[in-house]
Image (cartoon, rainbow, N blue to C red; front, side):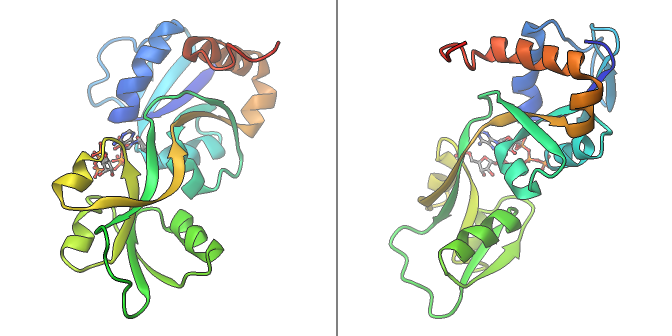
Amino acid sequence: MSGLRIAVSKGRILDETLPLLARIGIAPAGEIGRRLIVDTTVPGVQLIIIRATDVPTYVAYGAADAGIAGKDVLLEHGGEGLYEPLDLGIARCRLMVCGYPDAPLPASRLRVATKYLNITQRYYAERGVQAELIKLYGSMELAPLVGLADCIVDLVDTGNTLRANGLAPLEHIADISSRLVVNRASMKLKLPAVERLIGDLRAATGEGADAPA
Ligand code: ATP
Ligand code: PRP
């Protein structure tokens, strides 16, 4: 599997990805610490550690051959230049419209705060709803509480963050999990290594275990 650079993001995805990679024999060589490029126990296989939202960009441009990214990030990016061969089944959650339960319809245009502008724009356009979108970078739950927005589009897992702030999930947009993405050129030029990575990860995650051969 030599000559592969794999992009992963810090935080939740890295925490869930490292055990998965360990199962297929890929482990960071030493502490990751604040390093951004990390060699692994497999010669030639490197990890790069970047922001979650940057994973599709690095992989689409070929700066990484493959990457692990949430479906939310991929939907928002659009997926151009990427293959998405495998659902890894980690970091599962739902992308939802959330707000005050039983809130009256706003007198004017619905105001929606989110970091997912493209997904949200598509969602309301498909429903013929005119919405004003407000871009935020985190802690979206605050926006309805202080009158910045009528509702938010954000990820929900346990629902604890919503409940703690008196909000509720209102509309389901998409089920989310992390996916393996592969650069289109690497798929051709490094086919044996990429196929091995996909095969090993598929076996490790159990995806396709019940599928016909
Ligand atoms: P950044 O570092 O760019 O601010 P982030 O804060 O979104 O990114 P994480 O919170 O680690 O980074 O989220 C990374 C991915 O994990 C998300 O894109 C999503 O796919 C998934 N995720 C986020 N929140 C949850 C959650 N509460 N439960 C399960 N999966 C989640
Ligand atoms: C994510 C998401 C929600 C929360 C949902 O935030 O944006 O706020 O998790 O999870 P829950 O339903 O289990 O409460 P995260 O913890 O990643 O913080 P962030 O604001 O830095 O993205």
